[in-house]
Length: 415
Ligand SMILES: *Cc1c(COP(=O)(O)O)cnc(C)c1O
Ligand SMILES: [Zn+2]
Image 1 (cartoon, rainbow, N blue to C red):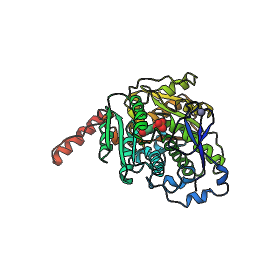
Image 2: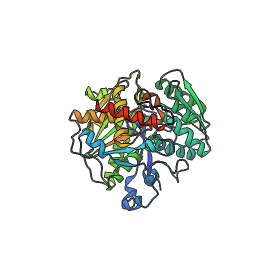
Image 3: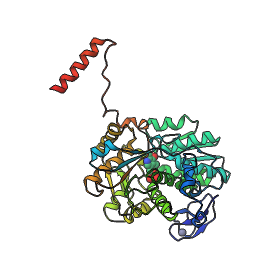
Image 4: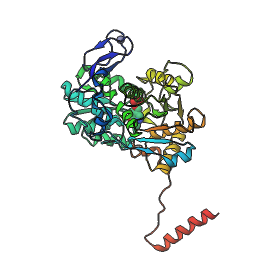
């Protein structure tokens, strides 16, 4: 049962019928899906949710499709890991990793937004789907479209990591590499969407797409035992995930599923592309577009569509925003791998690196619950760490050579 009421302009409040559209005709503000929450009173309970399969669709009443999902019915419900070794390393008492580096089927949180966007595109009657991507979205659209029998086109900056390009191409999608940055790709896609009439998941069906991110927040709260964390650190590209985690928390409070825990939301960016964190640190709500230059390519959006709203969520929730250098990103990727056995991509290095920085600054207290949002998989960004990890020790297949190696190692340790 859908409780979707309308699309509503975030600026002037004008409401629109449910259609593949994303900007207000009056003020050009972005449109957002709004719901009639009263219809769920007494019906949408913890028990009902817990009785359902472990996928993101166990919260389907709060996702904007009419029927059952036709794309990505298995997606979501990833582990929330109590990170005891990382707690020791960072000197904090209660820290969790929400691990979407193992999200089904393409190993990033984009599988959540894509399953909503494509299920909605099918309801709208589209046959061809597309996206403007910084990498993970391309792979997710390609895979989920293939499984649903939809034709797909993915548009990417020409210089993405090989793992991201191969991780889209394998699904038989058509990949268009644009000579330009993500912001150029996005601009072109708006034109193509208008002219070709395709469903661009993050352009003309963006209001529906963006709602899929809420499932990441719902899962955190259910997996914490029906409670919101005190602090949550979120990677930001367009800033959408950051705003939707906040929306998810507010919805669960409104529906009586959790108590208000005054959760503070923190935004994480790479210093080489930090228009949102800079605005927060400067105490401004103006986002100045930048030219991106960072190894965290999945977060490299210089002119973030939801930057203004992410900034507001961060400030109103009592959170903060920070950014980290490429070297700090690599160090944080290694720290997560060596303490918790989780191999995240550069975006995860950004989130953990920023978490560490905020703890050291005293912005996040050491004795309260913290959730770190790990959103993508390290196998897709191997270029970033290839020079930062030990090479294999090469020996012949001989026990003597192995003995020598071990001896050399222990001598090195003793020295
Ligand atoms: C796309 C992406 C994000 C952030 O997305 P928003 O545009 O801010 O919602 C975070 N992490 C990874 C790995 C991504 O691919
Ligand atoms: Zn408007």
